[in-house]
Length: 180
Length: 391
Image (tube, rainbow over the protein chains, first blue to last red):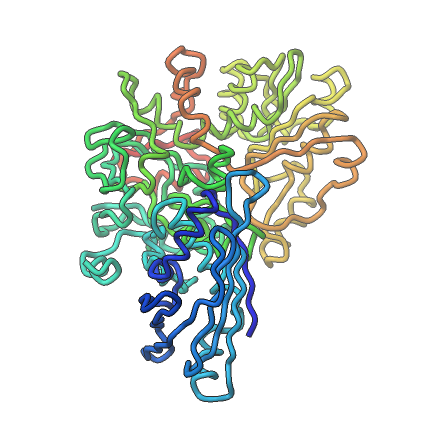
């Protein structure tokens, strides 16, 4: 599966690049990612939520790192769902914003997990990546992922409609949503 | 707290709901002192704007006192104890749209941007109490409201002006003003406004303030036309006269230089069969909006004129007079109001006495009476023009 998505973030290229390059930041806006830990100069461990409450963990290797231009990575050989990605950062025509171009490739095999992953992405796999980039923009421009009463889940906002009613959360719902 | 909730098509109900709390660190909680029912709330009431859910708190025109702020709110902009008017579009202040002062197109404030994008091609900003399409934010017909990006939108009121004098800075005064501003009014212009509801009345007043030579009010409710006439505008009742002929008479045969549609998607029409055509199409959902006012504005406007649309549309229309629009060099301008852009300049105009927003208030009710307020406003009973609610 081959996905591309683009957004424009009204922040300098160096800031957007630096944010992405600190891979620990990726889970703040990528819905399926729970955690990324840098383990070496070019290596990192990625933890994602998989369907049916499973956790999937894989090692990734940085394949390219051109400061303020491009970052590339791919999963190490033993990954359950081999994947690779590149992100490039381009100064937008307005001279102040950064265009973020993402290209992801998932090698979804015929195995059980592959099927589950395909199902997880659903009929509109682009939607998830588009939403991830929308949240990247929110984090960089507005400080954090925006919550409403109807959609209070932050980055776990895939539930589109029907949602919660647009009225304040109970204390219990708030604890669940905010984790405090 | 108590809040006025959507309870299904044509039904609202004041219910007990949880008190709001901070969800994002740039939020504030506002204790509401005054709130109002907007004409666009009626589109929600009727179910013409999709993605309403049972229990959604209504209301996007409100003001009050800040009682709590999140850790990320800039104290130079807003603090606990401040008296604020809250603009209906929620805007982050930092994206490309906000940088261009297109606050109602904010790229970050709508958590349901994906839904809006599917319907409209690109997303809309978050808005208070205006369906899940615009984010699913609880509205302001309540005792309290959570206000995101509190350091961007809310306007501090530091003078002695009453709530009623400043409440409408939240939506309808800026909306009416933007309708007139988009007309690029020149000295000598004749401006016609379709719809003498609250937004239409403010569009008329704004057109005059911006230099129009004469302003025409088109509606069918005698009490609304009377209200416009008392404010110095020329009334035209579309049930009594042929609008096009009357407009030609009032503009030396040229047609109005500028036309403002302050009606939107639930228009009614002097011609019964055309109204029936649209009403049936709308009822079977093959057309979502009834665009009589827009059609008539386009056909009536003089060649080279500007048609400014501030009435709300939600979807698709049939029989759009593209030929008149194209061949006669008309300019069509529109937008949900970028309220933040207009609040301070309009506050100054209120302070200087150039605009009196209180002139349209006909009903003052308690929050508990909100369902009755919706009923009389929708059915145009008791000469209802504008309902202000006190929680």
